[in-house]
Image 1 (cartoon, rainbow, N blue to C red):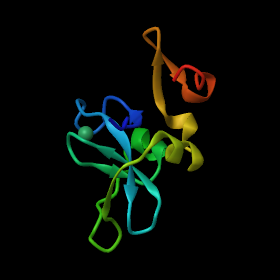
Image 2: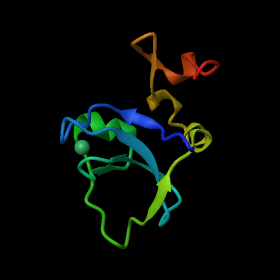
Image 3: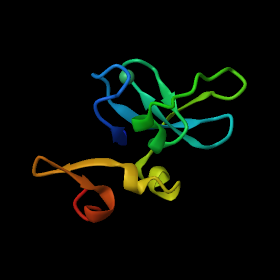
Image 4: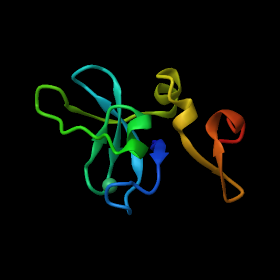
Length: 98
Ligand SMILES: [Zn+2]
């Protein structure tokens, strides 16, 4: 099964959901997406700032959950939310055992 890449937890908008990296078919870029409240953000930095966007059919089309490799290639590796021994760690510090 494909592993979804977690960007933030819990979601600052609904406080229960997990925020994953997803593809936007319209522009080929990645977005952050909360699977609980359907909120979308254009950049991982926007999640904490609560700068979400409300997509229209013109600028967003669901392209599925992004794979780990895509998220890293897109330059979001610093924002991958990873845990090791119960502590939050940076993906880039943890890539061997992630
Ligand atoms: Zn949410």
